[in-house]
Length: 224
Image (cartoon, rainbow, N blue to C red):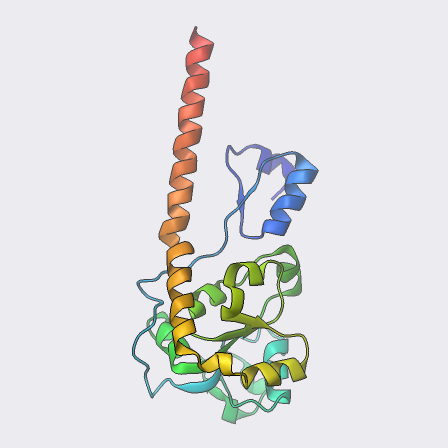
């Protein structure tokens, strides 16, 4: 979106706080951060499904590249299960569970995994566009390891651990925090409370009503 288009709106939001700050400075237009969110009615702790259980889980397409977190997991020797299209081009069949996992099964798969992996495009990570997969997985009660992204730790705290090297990934995957069910449940509740779509919608509604009220006041002044 161009700066001219941005200027045409009363309210502007970005899922990447760093991008919002940089763009606001450049354009002198207020841009508020509004992060990705989750649906707690779908993504929440609950019973596991042995049919969807896995040790280390990644869900996502290849995007026509050997995504680094999957490559690193294979190199680290993790017991990896992958759902998504195109993976037989990059990894052995033993790691591929299927090409499609429905939304109705996704939360169950997350909470049935001992550990869930996540990644970002580098430009998205740099600008603070945190993957929505993190919100869904943590809300489901999963332990998650991700590549680094601007602001990730501020949002998720210890619920999501970040890694840089294959050895980091191997070490974190074996750490006791992964099996702390109580901590995972607490993190799931916090994400459901603070980062639901309902919470995001409330912010939007409140801001729109504020702008409508302010514009109404301005119109009244103009008529006087």
